[in-house]
Amino acid sequence: MILRKATTEDYPSVLAFYEDVIERTPDIGIHARWSNGKHPAPDGIRAFIAEGSMYLYEEGNVIIGATGVTMYQGEDYHAITWSRDVADEEVAVIHMLAVTPDRQGEGIGAEMVRSAIRLAQELGMKAVRLDALASNTPAHRLYERLGFEYRGKQNLYAENTGWTDFYFFEYKQ
Image (cartoon, rainbow, N blue to C red; front, side, top):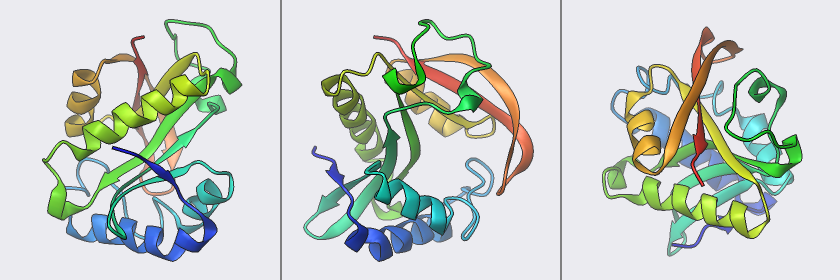
């Protein structure tokens, strides 16, 4: 599987992809608590694309999956006790992983995470991390199955959830 970096021309398709995922994924309001217009927010998607951090998995010209992969971690990650103490710019963080509802359950999300890990390693990142809502138990199981380890939780504010607990994970290299 090859993840392709999204371009500014992809923005309308990427936005439509996430809107479709939100509308048609069973229980997304329970687990991920994504909602159109709030998260993933249109401006956030545009920013990920602009900084070169949005990646797409396509078949033909159809987006099957999308994810953000930043080559830095934000300040929210500082409160967690990580297995390795590395600088923010040495950490890749996986964000907003989504697979079209028509193809969920086929292992595409797992392959996208593996591809993101390979990308981070090729770029010399010393750690790969991510966070997920405490309620997103299907994502937790996926990440742990792929070699991520739970490292802690924080109660943070997000536009789509208000104050809620987020679990933080780190890939065991």
